[in-house]
Image (cartoon, rainbow, N blue to C red; front, side, top):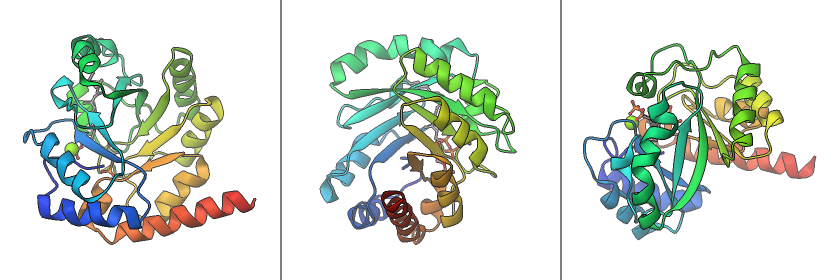
Length: 232
Ligand SMILES: CC(C)=CCC/C(C)=C/CC/C(C)=C/CC/C(C)=C/COP(=O)(O)OP(=O)(O)O
Ligand SMILES: O=P(O)(O)OC[C@@H](O)CO
Ligand SMILES: [Mg+2]
């Protein structure tokens, strides 16, 4: 995940060049609050170096950029704020229709991670309690029944604790759609734990921002995990 406010163009070029080698599947571009509106430039730089798809991860409709490949159209189903469940989407719908972006409707679930996150503050919503996997599973199930195509469990950017494995496993067991997991995954061990619990995709932001050498380490973890699944 790339935050347009945090990534410098020269660092981005290096990262985009290394991404192919380290089997990155997607770039997510976005943030809750974006102050530098440089999504277009960030996407153009990525495209100079790689064909890896770029997916928008928006905090609000100002973050829609048609040069991306797709958008996670998040509905914040862990919360009870109608603005982030459907309100912003009504505003965004005509822009999205015109943009030609592939729409990936996503049940976005914030999970308590020991500290208040930017998303929880901005959205004015309470995250799911981290020790209530059954509540997360029912939330995901309801989201899937309503037609959402992806579930995203997020402990929040820079989370102190990542999403607990028991919660990932409960959500994976409850739904048939892909499960994305992110927030606070900043080591090979945490990445492995999330994959083993049932994450289909892991999202990494701060970890690689702060230590680019985490990228090869995570690539090795993902490769080994995938091989173990194929062999089993
Ligand atoms: C309908 C459209 C196009 C947008 C609204 C989409 C919704 C409902 C968003 C849910 C609430 C929200 C503010 C989500 C932002 C998710 C996100 C991109 C998080 C990335 O982490 P940051 O919160 O930026 O972390 P930092 O504080 O570390 O920058
Ligand atoms: O920055 P990190 O902690 O990796 O989190 C990434 C993403 O899940 C945040 O929405
Ligand atoms: Mg951010």
